[in-house]
Image (cartoon, rainbow, N blue to C red):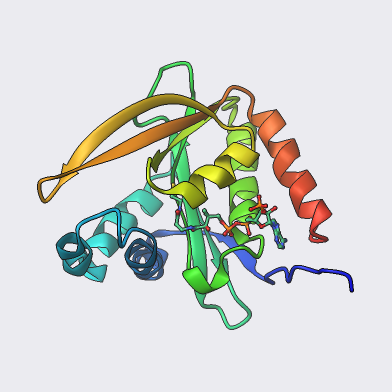
Length: 193
Ligand SMILES: CC(C)(COP(=O)(O)OP(=O)(O)OC[C@H]1O[C@@H](n2cnc3c(N)ncnc32)[C@H](O)[C@@H]1OP(=O)(O)O)[C@@H](O)C(=O)NCCC(=O)NCCS
């Protein structure tokens, strides 16, 4: 019996300020499913769609920032990616992936790969040839995803939420071109290329 992995059929669109509500819902819902044991429950419960929508309206409206949303066949947002010039991290990295969130029920079906590929393509067109991102140290699934894409651990930092110390690790890619090849090959191997 041959094993096949179902690829999600999604449409990837550049987001604008008007997509902020959909982005905020994906972000808040995915934080709640992913970070349940990593971030204090009180904080996860306090997260509000409205406050996050305000932030994302500003971020998506910034012309220096790339935000892409993946929509399913009925136009529902199932994931998003955001990135742009480096916000935080070693100066030798030009660009930064700020956020990548796929709804729990749509994970493992190529959507994260596809969104990252779209963002890295935009970085290349903009002339950014290196990039980094931050992941929670305890987020083993995301870390494995980036490590399979040959991300190299380059820095660590911590912050506090409700008195709880949370560690973060940065992954860097010195050549976005090499990362893009890996993303495209993975897509092609899964039959979506
Ligand atoms: C981490 C995350 C972004 C990865 O995105 P994803 O859509 O689940 O990942 P993909 O499906 O693209 O890739 C996962 C696996 O599926 C495989 N895959 C890739 N394309 C595929 C496709 N078209 N069909 C099926 N499988 C595919 C990949 O090769 C990969 O395999 P591996 O785990 O053996 O490396 C996502 O799981 C997520 O949002 N998690 C919760 C939030 C989070 O942690 N975000 C990151 C914060 S730093």
